[in-house]
Length: 181
Image (cartoon, rainbow, N blue to C red; front, side):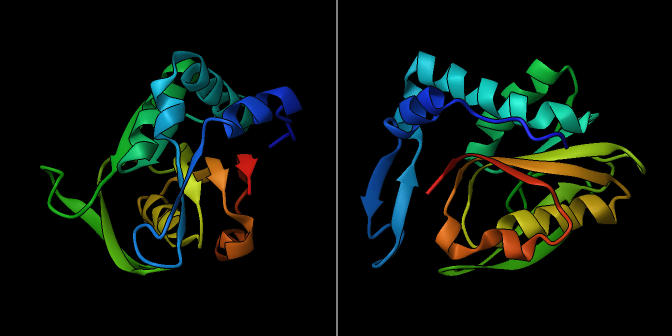
Protein backbone atom coordinates (compact mmCIF):
# COMPACT_ATOMS: atom_id res chain seq x y z
CA UNK A 1 0.00 0.00 0.00
CA UNK A 2 1.11 3.58 -0.63
CA UNK A 3 1.99 5.26 2.65
CA UNK A 4 -0.86 7.64 3.60
CA UNK A 5 -0.38 9.68 6.74
CA UNK A 6 -2.77 10.85 9.43
CA UNK A 7 -2.43 14.61 10.08
CA UNK A 8 -1.21 15.44 13.62
CA UNK A 9 -4.37 17.44 14.41
CA UNK A 10 -6.46 14.37 13.55
CA UNK A 11 -4.31 12.09 15.70
CA UNK A 12 -4.43 14.57 18.58
CA UNK A 13 -8.21 14.85 18.44
CA UNK A 14 -8.74 11.09 18.29
CA UNK A 15 -6.15 10.39 21.00
CA UNK A 16 -7.92 12.85 23.32
CA UNK A 17 -11.06 10.69 23.09
CA UNK A 18 -9.41 7.35 23.95
CA UNK A 19 -9.80 6.54 27.65
CA UNK A 20 -7.21 4.60 29.64
CA UNK A 21 -8.68 1.91 31.90
CA UNK A 22 -6.07 0.39 34.23
CA UNK A 23 -6.23 -3.25 35.29
CA UNK A 24 -8.73 -4.36 32.65
CA UNK A 25 -9.48 -7.14 31.82
CA UNK A 26 -7.02 -8.21 34.53
CA UNK A 27 -4.46 -6.58 36.84
CA UNK A 28 -1.45 -5.08 35.08
CA UNK A 29 -3.14 -4.43 31.73
CA UNK A 30 -3.86 -0.87 30.61
CA UNK A 31 -6.90 -1.04 28.31
CA UNK A 32 -7.29 1.66 25.63
CA UNK A 33 -11.06 2.24 25.54
CA UNK A 34 -12.40 3.72 22.29
CA UNK A 35 -16.05 3.92 23.38
CA UNK A 36 -15.83 7.66 24.25
CA UNK A 37 -14.52 8.27 20.73
CA UNK A 38 -17.35 6.23 19.21
CA UNK A 39 -19.93 8.14 21.28
CA UNK A 40 -18.82 11.45 19.75
CA UNK A 41 -20.24 11.86 16.22
CA UNK A 42 -17.31 13.95 15.02
CA UNK A 43 -14.72 11.65 16.56
CA UNK A 44 -16.40 8.57 15.15
CA UNK A 45 -16.56 10.10 11.66
CA UNK A 46 -12.91 11.14 11.88
CA UNK A 47 -11.84 7.66 13.02
CA UNK A 48 -13.72 5.97 10.15
CA UNK A 49 -12.37 8.48 7.62
CA UNK A 50 -8.81 7.90 8.88
CA UNK A 51 -9.13 4.11 8.70
CA UNK A 52 -10.63 4.41 5.21
CA UNK A 53 -7.74 6.60 4.06
CA UNK A 54 -5.29 3.96 5.30
CA UNK A 55 -7.21 1.09 3.65
CA UNK A 56 -8.00 2.69 0.27
CA UNK A 57 -4.54 2.22 -1.35
CA UNK A 58 -4.90 -1.57 -0.88
CA UNK A 59 -7.85 -1.57 -3.33
CA UNK A 60 -9.88 -4.06 -1.28
CA UNK A 61 -12.85 -5.95 -2.63
CA UNK A 62 -13.90 -7.02 0.86
CA UNK A 63 -13.45 -5.73 4.39
CA UNK A 64 -13.21 -8.39 7.08
CA UNK A 65 -13.56 -7.16 10.66
CA UNK A 66 -13.13 -8.78 14.03
CA UNK A 67 -15.75 -8.97 16.79
CA UNK A 68 -16.82 -6.76 18.45
CA UNK A 69 -15.55 -3.17 18.13
CA UNK A 70 -13.90 -4.09 14.85
CA UNK A 71 -17.42 -4.62 13.42
CA UNK A 72 -18.39 -1.06 14.19
CA UNK A 73 -15.36 0.33 12.39
CA UNK A 74 -15.08 -2.27 9.63
CA UNK A 75 -18.67 -2.01 8.42
CA UNK A 76 -18.36 1.78 8.18
CA UNK A 77 -15.04 1.49 6.31
CA UNK A 78 -16.56 -1.03 3.88
CA UNK A 79 -19.43 1.35 3.13
CA UNK A 80 -17.03 4.23 2.49
CA UNK A 81 -14.89 2.04 0.22
CA UNK A 82 -17.90 0.66 -1.64
CA UNK A 83 -17.02 -2.96 -0.96
CA UNK A 84 -18.52 -5.88 0.91
CA UNK A 85 -18.14 -6.77 4.58
CA UNK A 86 -17.59 -10.10 6.36
CA UNK A 87 -17.41 -10.68 10.12
CA UNK A 88 -15.05 -12.80 12.18
CA UNK A 89 -16.87 -13.85 15.36
CA UNK A 90 -16.54 -15.82 18.53
CA UNK A 91 -17.46 -19.54 18.25
CA UNK A 92 -21.09 -20.49 17.80
CA UNK A 93 -22.29 -17.06 16.65
CA UNK A 94 -22.34 -17.67 12.89
CA UNK A 95 -25.21 -19.74 11.44
CA UNK A 96 -23.37 -21.44 8.52
CA UNK A 97 -20.33 -23.71 8.20
CA UNK A 98 -17.20 -22.00 9.54
CA UNK A 99 -13.43 -22.05 9.65
CA UNK A 100 -12.02 -21.82 13.19
CA UNK A 101 -8.75 -20.64 14.74
CA UNK A 102 -7.58 -20.61 18.36
CA UNK A 103 -4.85 -18.13 19.28
CA UNK A 104 -2.96 -16.65 22.24
CA UNK A 105 -3.74 -13.29 23.83
CA UNK A 106 -1.59 -11.37 26.30
CA UNK A 107 -3.99 -12.63 29.02
CA UNK A 108 -5.09 -16.08 27.79
CA UNK A 109 -6.42 -17.73 24.64
CA UNK A 110 -9.44 -17.17 22.41
CA UNK A 111 -11.08 -18.70 19.36
CA UNK A 112 -12.65 -17.04 16.34
CA UNK A 113 -14.64 -18.22 13.34
CA UNK A 114 -15.53 -17.02 9.87
CA UNK A 115 -18.04 -18.45 7.40
CA UNK A 116 -16.19 -20.80 5.09
CA UNK A 117 -17.60 -18.95 2.05
CA UNK A 118 -17.09 -15.38 3.36
CA UNK A 119 -14.04 -14.79 1.16
CA UNK A 120 -13.81 -15.79 -2.50
CA UNK A 121 -10.52 -17.29 -3.72
CA UNK A 122 -8.23 -14.50 -4.89
CA UNK A 123 -10.42 -11.76 -3.38
CA UNK A 124 -8.46 -8.74 -2.08
CA UNK A 125 -9.19 -8.32 1.62
CA UNK A 126 -8.40 -5.60 4.14
CA UNK A 127 -8.83 -6.59 7.78
CA UNK A 128 -10.06 -3.96 10.24
CA UNK A 129 -9.89 -4.03 14.02
CA UNK A 130 -9.98 -1.55 16.85
CA UNK A 131 -6.71 -2.48 18.60
CA UNK A 132 -3.48 -4.27 17.70
CA UNK A 133 -1.84 -5.45 20.91
CA UNK A 134 0.09 -8.75 20.90
CA UNK A 135 -1.10 -9.54 17.38
CA UNK A 136 -2.73 -12.89 18.12
CA UNK A 137 -6.24 -11.85 17.12
CA UNK A 138 -5.17 -10.20 13.89
CA UNK A 139 -2.72 -12.99 12.98
CA UNK A 140 -5.50 -15.55 13.45
CA UNK A 141 -7.83 -13.47 11.25
CA UNK A 142 -5.15 -13.23 8.55
CA UNK A 143 -4.86 -17.03 8.57
CA UNK A 144 -8.64 -17.47 8.29
CA UNK A 145 -8.68 -15.20 5.22
CA UNK A 146 -5.72 -17.03 3.66
CA UNK A 147 -7.25 -20.46 4.37
CA UNK A 148 -10.30 -19.27 2.45
CA UNK A 149 -8.10 -18.43 -0.54
CA UNK A 150 -8.26 -14.66 -0.04
CA UNK A 151 -5.39 -12.26 -0.58
CA UNK A 152 -4.62 -10.17 2.49
CA UNK A 153 -4.06 -6.74 0.96
CA UNK A 154 -3.48 -5.14 4.37
CA UNK A 155 -4.68 -4.58 7.91
CA UNK A 156 -5.83 -1.30 9.43
CA UNK A 157 -6.35 -0.66 13.13
CA UNK A 158 -7.47 2.36 15.08
CA UNK A 159 -5.06 1.85 18.01
CA UNK A 160 -1.72 0.04 18.11
CA UNK A 161 -0.02 -0.76 21.42
CA UNK A 162 3.52 -0.79 20.01
CA UNK A 163 5.47 -2.08 23.05
CA UNK A 164 3.57 -5.39 22.76
CA UNK A 165 5.13 -5.90 19.30
CA UNK A 166 1.99 -7.27 17.64
CA UNK A 167 3.39 -6.49 14.18
CA UNK A 168 6.01 -9.18 14.72
CA UNK A 169 3.22 -11.78 14.51
CA UNK A 170 2.22 -10.44 11.09
CA UNK A 171 5.33 -10.89 8.89
CA UNK A 172 4.79 -9.79 5.31
CA UNK A 173 1.47 -8.13 6.14
CA UNK A 174 1.08 -4.40 5.57
CA UNK A 175 -0.31 -3.05 8.87
CA UNK A 176 -1.48 0.57 9.18
CA UNK A 177 -2.45 2.24 12.47
CA UNK A 178 -4.27 5.50 13.06
CA UNK A 179 -2.94 5.90 16.63
CA UNK A 180 0.21 4.34 18.06
CA UNK A 181 0.84 4.16 21.81
